[in-house]
Picture 1 (cartoon, rainbow, N blue to C red):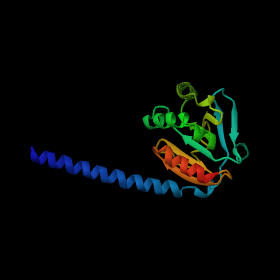
Picture 2: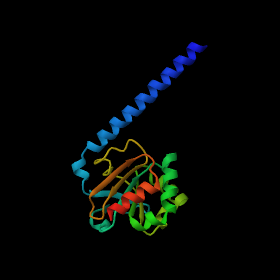
Picture 3: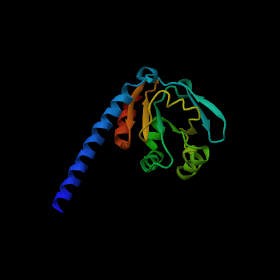
Picture 4: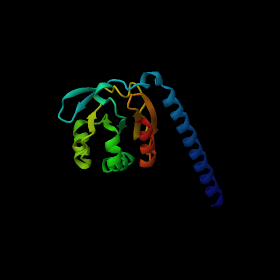
Amino acid sequence: MRCKTKIHLVLILIYSFLTLTCGNDYQNKLAKKNISEIETLPEINILLLDSTQTIITRETTANKPTLIYYFSPDCEYCRRETELLTKNVNIQKAAKLIFLSYAELKEIRKYDSTYRISSLPNATIAKDYTYSFTKFIETGKFPLLVLYTGRQKLKKIFMGEVTLEILLQYIGESI
């Protein structure tokens, strides 16, 4: 019995180690992949909830930090982060929020009806229907937040959950 317990413990330690080291490799890979293409806010083709197509450009987000929030409607971490973002007035005032997903439009609409993102004055929720955002950056982990300064220069890439305090700190530095 003790031998099985030790084997399980060793396997758990190996799995944990591999997960942490692979995660760091993934972050390094993400940080290096096409970084020159996203140093300034790229054009992103999106499909709005009313099925109209539009393009997010530097002009549509000028003079204000832009936080691109790539999410999956069925991601538990995304739901928690979305709830925090939609309830925090300071972030909503300080940055343009762009919620993007690859999911079906009906799933995005359902997500929006839960969190009322489209009712926020400084937010857009849409489908990345041409995967234009994922051409520039790998989105293997949710949520993925990409912050641009008011001059539309890349400030920070956050993978996974991030605290509001850290977001506000980086947004404050981006104004």
